Length: 109
Image (cartoon, rainbow, N blue to C red; front, side, top):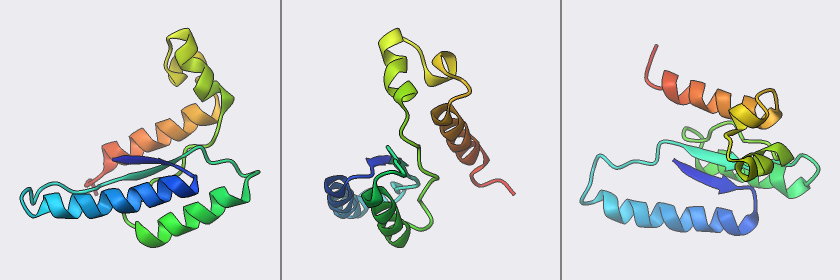
């Protein structure tokens, strides 16, 4: 899994990472990038949607639903809690529940 914030430099880093991964796969055939997880989705920022569209183009099978920006996600670690403990009904908690569901159902009919 590669978490990527929806910022332009992160997209370039992911492309560089993919090239490095391809080189490593020559020796470790089972190593694959299964999930690309967009984070810090902020609908108020136009670039977020543009970068998400680029990710859809480059990683259509691996792309997970994005994790929306949430102050609650930033606050939870300050209190030593997970998002599920700190703000279980927040958008961030909902997004991470959806991610867990996707990964747990991966490969099942």
